[in-house]
Image (tube, rainbow, N blue to C red; front, side):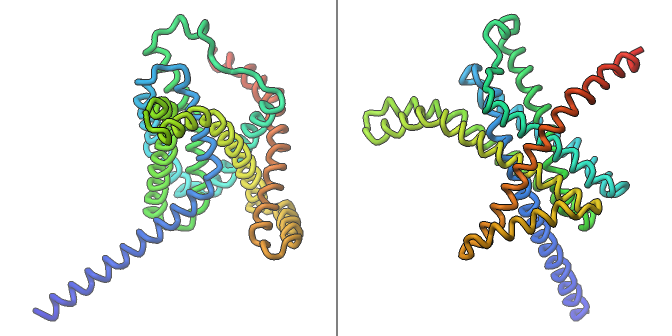
Length: 321
């Protein structure tokens, strides 16, 4: 009996060790997959603060909390089950869907590049907002932010799924949930810090202590510049990720030429500075992907504007009738 009991304990310990190893593997997969979505995360953090611009300061954090809850719902309730269903029933669809998302990222990045070249103000004016109450404006802003988040979250989940498609279904579910929750906490935690930095700076600027006062003024003066830099980084990362997704997607579909050409060009770029060859290789590949992202984004923008949108507008009345 005693030996049987200890054998059972050994079995339980072995199972526990296996489970711990599996969880460690899943956590490592989540970290790796999450890093691939960095461009989207940076852009999300750069874009989201604009949804609270012009609203009452005391409503900023509650609005961000509402958007964060909507983001979690997008990832865990809508996208996670859909991703698992695709992985189980139609795994061949993952790469084309990922490329559709990559094309969208390229188009969004292209729009941001054009905004830099031809800046224009998209902000809602006071006259536009006048007919709405504060609660209605807040509802509209949250709904708009959650819709935008759905697209970005779908791309994050698709990138994650593409990196773990060979794993067991339970591990896919665990990694997707871990990435979804982790990304949401990181993005909206950063956004909360960003939107309240001005208030903290104003409060610190009133301090009688010189160093605190100087720090506060620096925060107030520096945040607009920080947001511009963050937005620029997000734009570049979005183009790099979008272009990279398209190149790798073509490779997965059997068109190896583009990825092989990028690898050869990046290797040649790396040889320029041998002591930093690994970094130069990455930088060269990322730069090429970003440039291709701008080009693809412009093509997708034209296709959307002159083909897809008119076709949709023509077909939509028929579906209603």
